[in-house]
Image: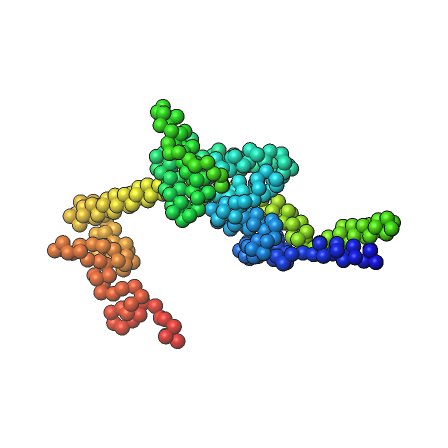
Length: 192
Length: 153
């Protein structure tokens, strides 16, 4: 009798939530390269409270090259716990031209993800080094400032602050290279 | 009594951790699929992304500058062509091909240079089309069509 109750209790506890089927459907779409469909399923799963669905939505958005939305999706997903998810987040930063953000995340991945991820991390770092402007022009800095302002107006403060911070980094580097002490615009403290 | 509890706990743990129970769990399966798929699809992404796009954010400004340069170059080339054309009309630099009205020549040619800009003797701007009295694809003088359309069947 007790055994039957225990089995019943266990099966109830382990029963999948309402979003589980959507999570699985999203995973299958993602595996088959149907990222748009995967995104829809993951968003439904996330809305139904399925853990992990939000991060997977972020990964789908990276594959769809919707990098700013991906960064929004990764908000609230803890960093430093899953090297693969961190790598996708770094890709989102890279795609959104947020090189400092990408570098910051990649530096934290280290060897946690195994040899395949480590190779990809090294490759991405090389690309960042190649694309990051060494001597940032004024219009580059202005682009970041403009993006920051535009996103603030759209009520996306975290993403806005990431652009502000990137612009401030570039302004500081530009000031350093030109030998002036002008530090550039102040950057808010939040992280994307 | 304690033996019964132990059996119950053992049965419960079996139910929770048996391979069948795990295989039937869509969440577990979803995570397993995503681990594999995300890893597979991460390979080479950085290189592809870097190859796909032009440059840094600056590209907006750089693109505008490039567009301006291209426009200026196109204008300069057009101006150069106009100067050369003016020189030909006045006789200087007139080639034998132009003089004979070979295909590609401005006036009196074989009709290959549709729409080429030129000027008449009075200095009015004309095109080759005006000169020949017809346009490509439109009814030619004499009621012929440049190309028989579907209605020709």
